[in-house]
Image 1 (cartoon, rainbow, N blue to C red):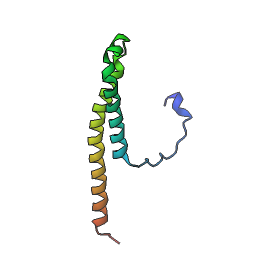
Image 2: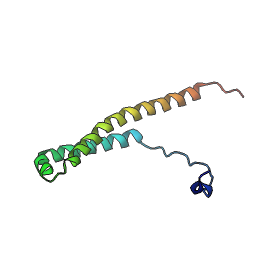
Image 3: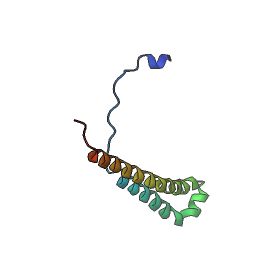
Length: 93
């Protein structure tokens, strides 16, 4: 085993934090697109300063956020389906 892992403490992983994941990802996506739209009128300035990556980073964040919204909505629906199926299943006691 690697020397840097030798003294690593071994303990249970904490429970994952759950919260309004769909709302959080949607809000973040809206912010990325808003930052992209705010920067568009200054596109020439960003180009002169060699900072176009700021504009395109915001565009990429918004685009990836759309994929994230799709993913977390599907995940949330699957969690709810699983909980409903578990609640509807007869107990074996």
